[in-house]
Image: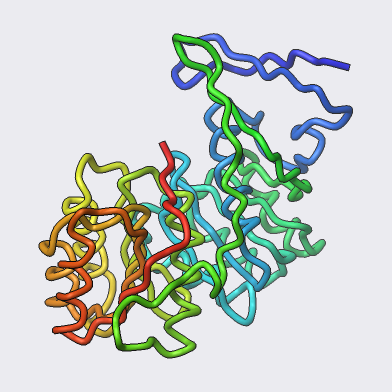
Length: 302
């Protein structure tokens, strides 16, 4: 049965909006606290759940305007949340938290101390709910199961655009070493972690990470150099100097970006191939002992 659910408004108060729901169970059935879910909330929920679905170990993702602003995986969900928050606390303000483990009392206390729009998790301890429900407007949502759709579409002025969704698993087989220096298994794990995130950032997209924690994110820029500079700038604000890995959703067309990474201490990079300057990039990596990996697919998101 098709249901038409009216929303408060669209992206802005002057716009009418509604959700057409074709399933028996809607996203609103999973809400357990807070104000009514909005149009923008639904867009963020869509982005966050798709990204969270990439991870199996305890992971925390904070979303702002459909883009991750802090992501971390760790042995416990408490540690993962703290790492995701400290990745960029300024951007996390008013964000939406996505967790793939139950929210416990200790974690609820940490969340309560800051301002967030929503918290999505598989479940919440009773004591955790008692704390979080004190914030009447805070939307709490039990994580629904999402379907991995083979095809997706977008509405345009010219009609609906259809495509097959990018469902290629991001793992070690997704990477191909094209320089001499092989990265450590730990760094490979960081590259895989970073690529799972860069896939869900608006292009041009860059992820800088260490120990499965995002250090700097660059996205939505009209050139890749500026996306990288933005990521490096944020990294320098919140983190001390140290080694890190870089994942790019598209190839670096010139040496300027890879040289900038090298100067800032990055010696492990993942990017797709396809540039007429691929050989020049590989040559630079060989000369400067950079572990350069070409990815199986490009990971653009428009």
